[in-house]
Length: 397
Image 1: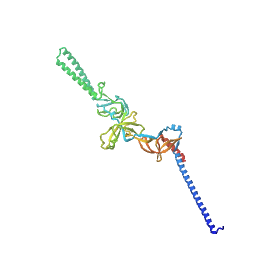
Image 2: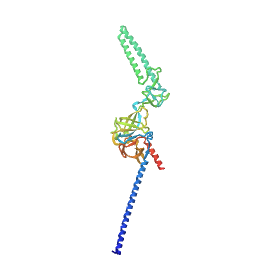
Image 3: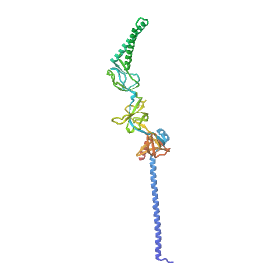
Image 4: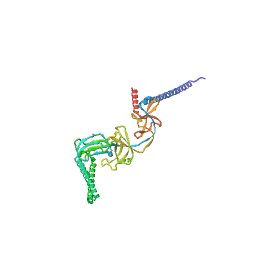
């Protein structure tokens, strides 16, 4: 059968259309394949960046290096936060164990036996004062004692005469009365000496030894050799620094939470030591200028580290709060804008960003970035941060 020219043209168009469609499909497949390959390349690139970032956050350490650095581990887990309200305060002398030494008799300093800052024992002689007033008091005692001796002898003689019916009863009663008066005079003179702390017997009548009332430290000294002093002059201040006061101001809004007997922790930025105690006093009145109440804590000070004048922070304990996940405060470090912990991995650590919550200064709540049981470095983490910085610098070069 002969094919007409028109039929041949139609068949050619059909073939061309089929070829064109196939070409379009082929081009589409190629474009699709190319897009998938580009997508896979992007995924590989992102994975490469993540792997590189993780690698840059990793620190290689052997067990020997870990032990030598003194880095310890802890497992993240539940903890109890000891919530506390901080108040700025100051260490002061314990006024119950601080005294101003006064001579109690006027005189002139013949000897000054101690220096400022010297530790003294109870009864130690601090200074010697020559006092005419003291000489008169001792003379009065001596005269009274002699009169009492004479009155006692007269009393005994009159008693014997009365018993022998030689003397009248009236003479005996007069002698007895005179003896009682002499006894009173002696006691009066002795009590005058005792009131000023002077001994009744002394070879030098005007010599007065000023002694330390208790063991402590000479924190003030206002006496020089040859200086005239009044009986009420404060010549020394002695304080037992074995205990001191931590005083702090309490605003009216905090008076409901700061109460006598509450536990506190006293700390200072000057050193790492902390002292625990309880609030011993909260003032009933507000200061006219500050409008705050004074509160104080008695702090034991066996090593003398808590010196009067030292600024401190008094943290008043509140109610404890339980948190589901926490780490020690030492575990946290800052890298750029992130807070991280160093999580233990095989062969070392990796810096893991975390989100933190409440803290009591020792323990920090973790809200994200860790799971219970994760092992993290809990001490000397600054060493790991330093090593991470060194590694980053080496990669940069």
